[in-house]
Image (cartoon, rainbow, N blue to C red; front, side, top):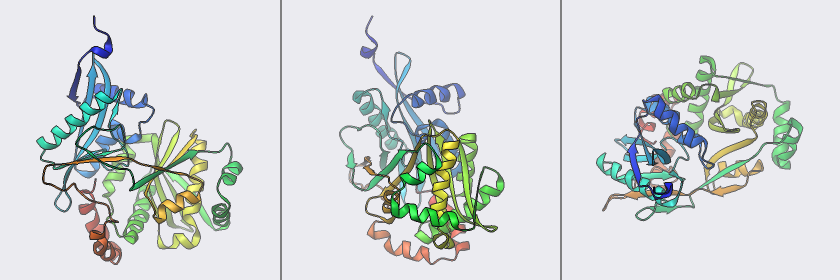
Length: 355
């Protein structure tokens, strides 16, 4: 009988509606050191439900056992074109595989699926190298993560001096912090987040996307809300997985800066995450050389380069959705000036195509 490594690899399309199959994929992801929440079937299904885009998942099997997977979102947009993305609406989610040969087979199958779906661009956000035919971008994005300290005071001391001073000032302000998943927290988070991204010049995602992720992750997701009096001024929706907190959709209103509400929010989240049993804080990605990247570095997080991969059909340019691209400069400036009610009405229609 051949050794397991000699058995042929079969690339299959997973049925995410089959709870047994989804559980097997989840078990594989949970056992993979470099996996992220954006690889999980529940992320894929929540994104599909919340954005209206289609979820796919390719798995590699050897001798009946899963030896690789790639989570996929089929993103279609009148403005930004079509793309098959791993993983849609996430900052990670590339190919997971037991070895390079399996990874390359999965990437090749992904490209075949992209062509069959009439998607001229395929995108892999992180994961193993996909082999020939893919371009590599290892300069645009950097990630930030570090371990949490053992107690509240140690956490404060772990923050570099200048940023620690800002946190201390925030702690003296009349701000209150709550966490939850109820309708009140959801509504307040969306109001704050929508204003925050409008101020940055980008459209807000549909509220149903946040609801779907909260519902899909259950106790493994919540909202931390900072109020000044009765007014919400900062909020963040976070995921919790394998002892790590992932603050993902967060922001503050115009008043948040003067109140140092964002400083209070992230420090409070570090303490809240430790109370939940977390030992690590993943601050997510930022574009290299930007203000958000500098903000995270000020908290004592060292940047690590993120590797993304793209592939485009012959004669086609790959999809480009980076708002820092000079071709979007005018649109960003105009969006920042929109009345909030208009931005909130039009934003979700546009943003569902960003993926």
